[in-house]
Image 1 (spheres, rainbow, N blue to C red):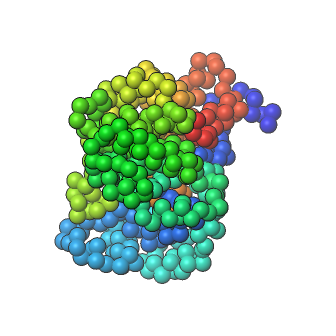
Image 2: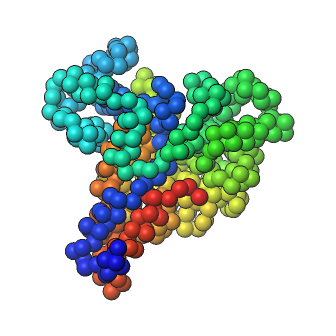
Image 3: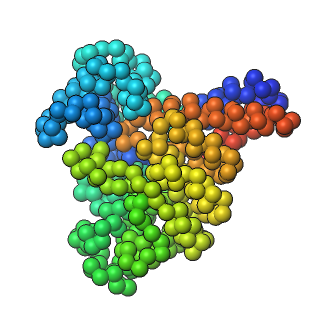
Length: 415
Ligand SMILES: [Zn+2]
């Protein structure tokens, strides 16, 4: 350990960064995976990987003659076979989503040079959910991950209501979209859970929504609340129900409970509804909205990520102005190596270590393996260049300092 305190030479820096990135266990602050207790909600395995919506979207580009209805009528196995054939055999799988599948197979020790998926499927059949979670987390170098939990989901809620032994590696996060977006659409669902809400956003209704938030934050032990918002989201607003619900319900509840409010801003829902989950797109959002929220709620911590690359620089600057704004992750369409590189360098230069560089957003458990492998490969050289710049000034870079910094960036729990 003493060597960690020795100043590193320029040529030793990249290996020291890689060593820290490879040995500090990470906390993945945003995923869509589940504790094994949720049964079929935990997606894993080859067919889930291959039919992931990123790849479905790419299939329809490769096969313009394929009708949406024909694809969605196919079994999951047949969909996976078709995607394998079209995107991995007929063409080189150059896209990030395709490469991700290959990284997963490679890290699992499986050979992807096969036209027939049967041997790969046979291997996955030998795995159990619990055993596979252990394997994936080990290969991903992740010690803890945050789920995205929705009490209004009819499959998910009964599991919480019945109760189960929590896997301490899976933390709860209260997802707000289904309870707050498109008001008054959530009214029947909230009423069915026993909350006395009505379409008009009266004082009584707002109080009942706060009760819903408090009840469910407590039940799932929410580490934060999360909502995804369209590019048109504005604060303040005279006529937006979701703006009112955030300001009057979510932010006060987060303040009382001492948890962050995460907002993921910039998703345009279902621009192509035929693509289902793959049908969402991106739009540029308004940074002034983030600034005004941060100013009006100084005692709430806001975890912010934005979907448009064009918003990323101004988000960094907003975070410089407001200590309660914490940029996190490279979300969805930004989770590509070229963009992770650009965004990570920009954040380090504007914010030092006060941001969360990445989350996986994994919807299929196995994706943790490739998302983190690919991110390490990009974040490593960016960090190494920054430490080399420091060393060039005469400042002494040590392995201990690098390790401390990597822990601060990716190894910590949400505060
Ligand atoms: Zn997500």
